[in-house]
Length: 287
Image (cartoon, rainbow, N blue to C red; front, side):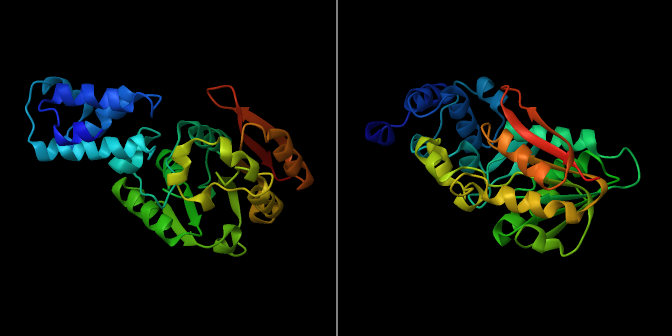
């Protein structure tokens, strides 16, 4: 690595080759990561890299790219290094204060949209909004909705607010606080959440990239269900009759989460699987 830093490749094509080689053991997608990091360094899109393959770069710019590669080799997420991540076909700002939006969480948005009443200006609550990805996706698809997004972290709320402004979401409001404390006795037609659900014993086997993300947004206690218990137990008091609770959870937690829904008196309890076939999102309705 030191030799590459001292003598950086001079062309876009050579830099890409070096990036793929350096990331080969640190990423499941070394080519994609190398392209994203180089495009970020150059301030262009990935497609432009191919038209600029022979372009010679100054050593300073090549050096910045190699610094990003070094950080990626330490398993820092690409989204943190570029400050951007696509979710629901929208471009979100990402910082170390929020979770990186993940493709599997789009199922949470899909189920929320499928279960929302088709008319009547429904009210939606997103608990633990982080970057705002879920709340903004719902708000953008249903401009007739009023979406309230909450987070205990002021830094996370600031990121979500910036994303909402950049993406033009006017039907989105923010509240600071721990779960339902942020909304008092408010009631909603739908509550969605992607809460922390990693169990204490699971951390050793987790992707090293998670070490760079906010632990409070990931750690779910001894069995991973601590925050889910709190949310599910309190949800019926904050749902209108016929309102839905929809939550993301770990692939091995569907049975336990379903039991929590039933204990809370929710009806039509079901679990949906993500594109990988893993049970990922559970839903239930207040009578």
